Image 1: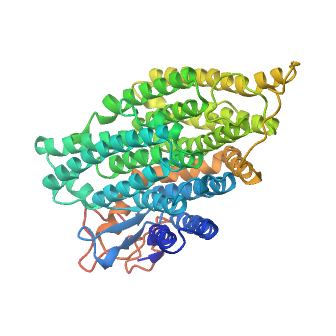
Image 2: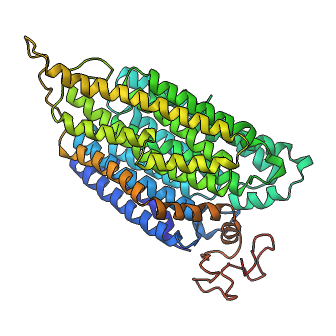
Image 3: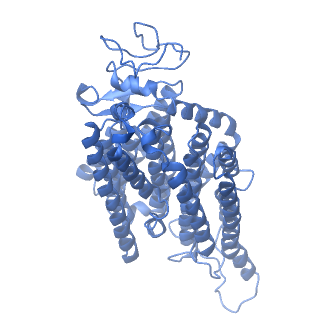
Length: 549
């Protein structure tokens, strides 16, 4: 059993508690601790991802209690990928918050930021459905505190709406967990997968209800139509670094759908037939249409970016709903891309807002800003990525989704919705860029009698925020250049998800063993050399795969 696995949860929790108790009035100390802790999390995430890159599944049992009786954390390719994505995003977001002064506009930004990371990382690493609910609540509480950071009536109203919708999701989650426990007697994901697989379809009404409820819960988190209402106002009104961090929040919902419906409710399970092709696919396509319509109709740039997040989640879940290895790998690539692109756009909108000296960036004529050429160039790159134009990663991601959708019954609907939606997004972002930058430049060249066209001097915007945005754009470029190696890693991740025997073997057999699929060799010295952990009495026949797997 590796103890490294619990550090991504314990480290931010301890840092947050220390900052609240011992450094609440010392902003500099909070900044140093927060940056150091986030960089340490990034190094841990890289290590865990590297460990899982050969197919190793690692297990941590709290109190050394074996599953399904104890709480377990499990690290496989998917969970470590999402942990790494979160930590990579957290570094530029935190640097932006410090450089722009957002962390000094309210109380307890850095402790809440660390608690938020704790909740997100815990949700990715937990192997227990009830503890997934617990981590959902941790990140919900922390995200509400971050959302209303710096105060304001509109921010408080949006935060209240956000909490109410997510509390509704939490209530449904509890109902689903209660139903699952009543039907199976367990909430451990691996044990649940074993028991659900043995249920007779004629007696599976309760499990089917639970599967539908869980899909609704995760759809709320992923902002899928018609459960998306909380997102536009919440993301638009949140402080810029908070909205940028929230770019990973909707991916938590997508992760849970992928995890539960490959492990516990696989597509070949008769009890849950029709959930994806009948329900999720049409909802995802309608979400794409709604999101892109919102991009075109928005009157403020922050709401435009918020609606683009909704549209991108629709595209991501359209790939998931194909529910093939190709669809899942395409969805994961698009998840990485859309996280970085949305975060960069939210921070750029804040830079524009600050340099305009305005409370919001609406599509009205305004004087030019200092450094407008650099900001315009960054906005141009981020908009190209978000709308899926070549040559950046958004174009690659959409090609992967369209290719994966060829096996879907609704292939032509998927293609038409994504292509038309992308065209609408291009029009919406082009209008925004023209209004913010081109019209301001044209106005600056027109003689005026007063100084209304004089550039606005930015306040609270230095080099660090621009470096943070530039770092995210550089990650998008790197994701494009390394699209081949990245897709191969994601294909291996998807293959592991559709062959969960290793996951089940690690969690349900010999405590503390780690299993690798590298040529079937046991890298941790199990006695039979099969590459799979076995207990003293032998592994469960349903959980232990063949040696030549």
